[in-house]
Amino acid sequence: MNNNYNIVISETPSGYYNFILKDNRNSLLFSENYTSRSGCNNGAESLKVNAKKISNYVSLKSLSKYFFIVKAANGQILAQSKKYESESKLREEIEKIILIFEDNISIINK
Image 1: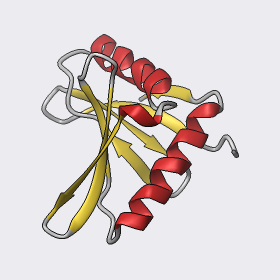
Image 2: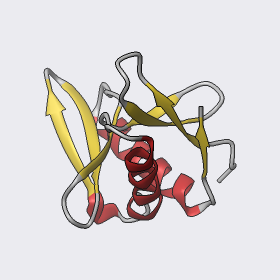
Image 3: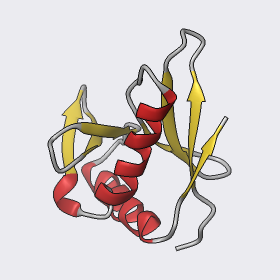
Image 4: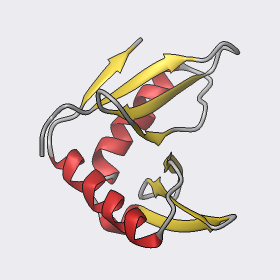
């Protein structure tokens, strides 16, 4: 898989930190807010490990849209996907994310 993907950590206007898995055009996964940059960095590092395993993905549906979450081994939610129109597109994106994380993904602090 092409390695044009990064995890970008940034501070929100309210002083929290979050990360986004993105390429040059699209944001693919979004974390919850963290109270510290180091906690957010730890979450991003955990995502790099746990996103390689299909067993850490949970598919969900809300208001006729599909999305998934990625969990750590301890059950903590690490990131959530954007919404998809179909379950088949959701499955394609999970497979894509797993392949992305087989490469070495950089973490960029902004």
